[in-house]
Amino acid sequence: MSRTAPIQLQAGDCSATIDPQQGGRLSSLVIGDRELLVQHGRDVFHWGNFVLAPWVGRLRGGLLRSGGEEYRFPTNAPPHAVHGLVTNAPWQVVGDGQVAVDLADPWPWAGRVVHTMTLAESRMDFRLELHAEEPMPADIGWHPWFNRQLVSPDGDTSAPVELVAEPGRMYGNDEDGLPSGELVAPVPRPWDYCFIDLPTAPSVRWPGLLELEVRSNCSHWVLYDREEAGICVEPWTGPPNSLNMSDPTIVTPDQPLVATMTWTWRSLRLR
Image (cartoon, rainbow, N blue to C red):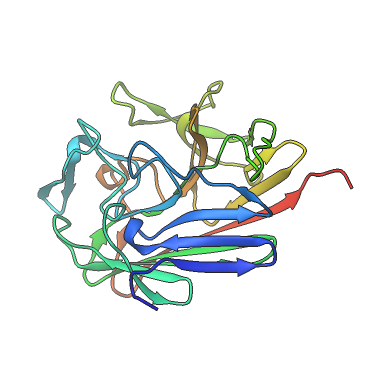
């Protein structure tokens, strides 16, 4: 197999496609005859399920302050830098269901991101690792886009998707749409916030058809349902702009940053 060719996974009536040339993302997940993921978006940040690294969400002003130094990154969501540096990068196939990419300029520290995906008949497991050659601040996570309606090959559409989640607290946003540092009670939907303290795993449900539950060891969740294109349930190891906060995650050569995520699904069809 080419080190850059898409990886095809199959388990029963489920199939998945991993595309190294598209940021190492999961570009397709078909269950039965229905595609669960958004296939086309207005940019690289609006389709499939892609990796966020070495930061998550927005980095204020594209500026990182660490160790008494300042580092600047392209502001691809003006005036901020968004979703890290690996979504536009080509990844390489390094194993069965596994892709990887080296952190490169303009990131000032050497490191490597490895993304491993496995598919079974009723679940898909994800493991994301950031390995550092020298101490660095970093956070990682995923950004899946789920279709609001599931469409069969003959054009039959499901009922609109429901986001099932009951977060305990959320980060209040400032005028720039970034966490102010204050944790508050969740506001009414629609959401585009970072939440913590979820008592149960969130799920996306297409009534009468399918329910998919998202579990993760990540402590932070961004829940996004403001666009008609799809909805997002995003496990992250930290909140937006976390690298500029007072106690950022530090990854070292002997302590890589590891995140896991599992999707499990069940049919809601009447039997």
